[in-house]
Length: 335
Image (tube, rainbow, N blue to C red; front, side):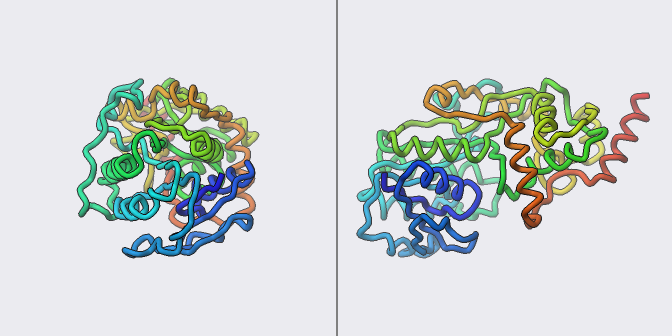
C-alpha cells in the first residue's frame, strides 16, 4: 500500500516506518526532520504541523492509509482537514490515558468510559495533566473527518523497547543487568502491562493495510510484576534477588511512582490505578495484535544501550546509592 506516516523519525514513528518498509509498502514520512534522519528507503516530505498551511507539501498526493501519533489537537485537525479526501484509511495512535476510570481492573476498550475531549484552546503538549483529554480530542477529530468505518483508534499502553528515551523500561533493564539485591515495588502479583514498540508498529501497519476499524487497546496481556522482573533478568542474563517493598513505605520515603526524578517505573499506587495496567485486551489479540516475551525486548534493549549514547532527559528511576539506602531502611523496619 501507499502509506503516509505523519512523523516517522522518532521511537514509535520510526518503528512504524521500518515495519512498513519490511512488509514491502511504499512509505512517505511527513515531518519537520528535527528528531532524527528518516529511514533511507522511505520518501521524506518536510512539513511544519505548527503552521496553518504546514501540510501544503503533501497536496496532490494520495495514499491508501495514514498513521498519526500526534499529541496536539491542532495538528490532528489540520491533518484531517487536509488529508481525509485523499487518504483511504486512518490509523490514529491514542493512549490508555484517554480512559476516565483508572481504578477498575479488567476494562475493555469497547465499553470503558473515556474522558471528555480537550477544548480547542488546550493544545500544549507540555501539559501532562491534559494529555488524555487531548488524545480523546484527536480521536473524535479522526472519526468525524474519516468516518468510523475508515478509522482505527489504537489506545496504546506503555511502549517499551530499543529507542525509548523515557527510561521507564531502560531503568529496569540496566538495574537488573547489574544484578544483586533489587528493590521491587509493591507485591509480586501486582499487574503490569506493556508492549514492545516493534510489535505495536507491526500491528498498526497491518491495521492500515487491512482497513481495521474501531477502538482497540494497543498493549499486551497483563502479567504479574514478578513475571516482568524475572523475565527481564533472563533477557539481560543476570542473577538477582528481588526484595519486595510495600507502597506505603515507598510513598513515605518520597519515592515517586511511574516516572520522573527519584521514581520507580511501572509502579503506580493502588487502588487508584488498579485499572491502568490490567486492561482486558482479548479483542486486540483477536484482531491480530502479536506480542513477544519481554525477555527478548530486554535483550535487544540492553544491546542498544551498549552501542548508543545515553538519551537526554532520562530521569526515571533510583540512583544506586538511593536504592541501597532505601533497602537498608526497609530491612531495619522489618527486622
